[in-house]
Amino acid sequence: MAASLQTTRERKPLAGRQPPPLGSKEMAAAVLYAIRSRRSIRGFLPDPVPDTIIREILLAAGRAPSGSNIQPWQVHVLTGAALKRMSERLSEAFLGGQPEQPEYNYYPVNWREPYLARRRETGWGLYRLANIERGDREASRRQRARNYRFFGAPVGMVFTIDDDLQEGSWLDYGMFLGGLMTARAYGLDTCPQAAIGNYPDIVHRELAIPDNQTIICGMALGWADAEEPTNALQTSRVPLESFVTFHSGTADDPVEA
Image (cartoon, rainbow, N blue to C red; front, side):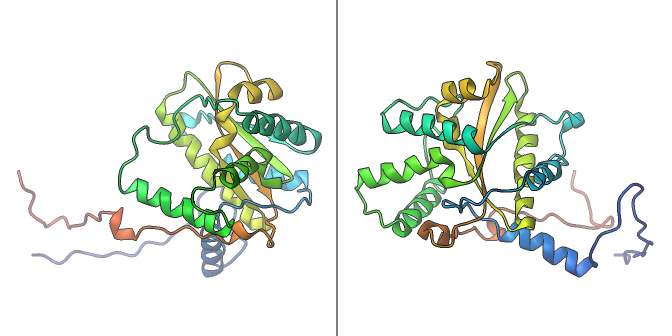
């Protein structure tokens, strides 16, 4: 087998791309820290987040790729009285026993392994930190109700998408939502919340969202409260080998017909 030729080419900066503010090692460390330090926070300090920072985070997330650059995301940012009113309406509906009626199925209709075990591990880990005993439905209900107050965060966000867009745009949206982890660059934390879409009639009405848009989820944003026990939850991740298959070879490898 002939030896493969290896060439080293000069790496030139792309046109229009600003030079990095840090060296390559420092840049890698900063980006990886932002990603690896992300966790879902369920207790926030009431300190307000400056509007300029919220805008910077959203602008950064808006650099997410999307098919044909259609950028399907629509975002509603709630603070102050608007956030308080939305929190009260959603909490009243949940605690009053109003049936949840999300506009799409976020979770599987029929749970199976390995997803069921992962769900249970996360759920019981959260409940242990919250000091909720198995079978204590009232305590579980109170914990769930905190979702609808955005866990006390000073900023709540609601994300919507046009009904006539297809699955590809939902994939694009996921990359946009992932981009919001840039909040970590400012020392801020988040909690993505599917629960905010459980009462779409309330959300549509409060935010004047057109009927032809679907509520994807909400998100709490703010500074984590170190005194909140559930913020100690660190969910596990499966090993790389369980979800990645590497394929490699060279031009000299035989190709089977």
